[in-house]
Image: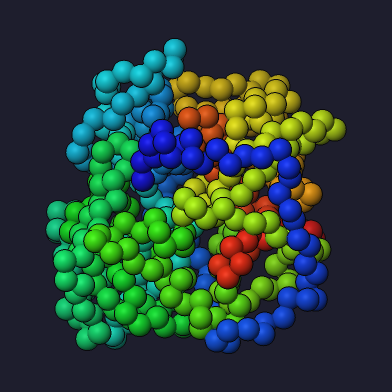
Length: 443
């Protein structure tokens, strides 16, 4: 969804000099003892149709489009080339403005075909059951949005590409919400939209009856090309839900009263499927104590403050607002941090053509430590080697794309999956807090 300038100002206006208060909680004190008693685990599944072609620029293009931030013309041109290599057909609703090499914004030109980089495909998905009898769809769990929308029997055949759809008429518990519609517009002018139903939704065996399910009658072209994903399950806060005239509650918001603890955790992993746990905290999935920090939910996101960073033996102040977003692949941090980080890597450069930092694949990458109040979240250097640039495989690649990139132009830093692969993260809906802890040491 596109941000206005006012939203960007509002997102940063609350910055204060004081560090956020961090509460440390011992693992042995994390007892399941409240609310409705339900707990469940959802394991992510690998998208077998996922293509490695242009993985780095595609991931960067997705986050630019999701938050409506202008891309460089070089990145758009690169995405066009990737789309052609992948034989992806793209669809337009309006041209995308772009930045040239001198950072000047100009009208759309060559590269327009790549104006829909939102998702050529998604690497990991999670199964969700909708309706009676249940229909299983693989969805992307996204803490950066608050809509549960799916391909359905109302989606035009021309916009389907072998997707598993939600067959509305096949569900005996489906009820249309009269007069309700939804529309999500992306930064390039494309959009997905449709009608709203209430139906039974089950995740990990926990059922929520009369959950709002947003049925797509129009789908942005990039989603059409991703046959493995049938939509999104938003896990942000209710007030950024896009249903009109009345906003709808998320699955998590409706499920909280039934859970043993009003929270869920993300345990994403590098190079393999991870999992989400709802209603409990698995002590085997992290090391040491959990450190909780307050969330500013005003803008609907899991937003928090980071105060400084450390690279090697050097620590610098870098007070900034950040959001925890499982729907973003990369770690997007202020330009001062990315500049300092890549200055430690010989041969690295901020490459205009791919829109971000690249480096020699044989380089030794330093760890990046992000200071969240008194907690120091370490992202190991080897996590930063996100994708090859000049080949499909790391085996013969010489140039690689960085997993940490600049958030310049965004209203906040975006801590995506690169961060979550290093940090076990708890999303506490009851207290509006985020909890962080390092992953267990590898054997």
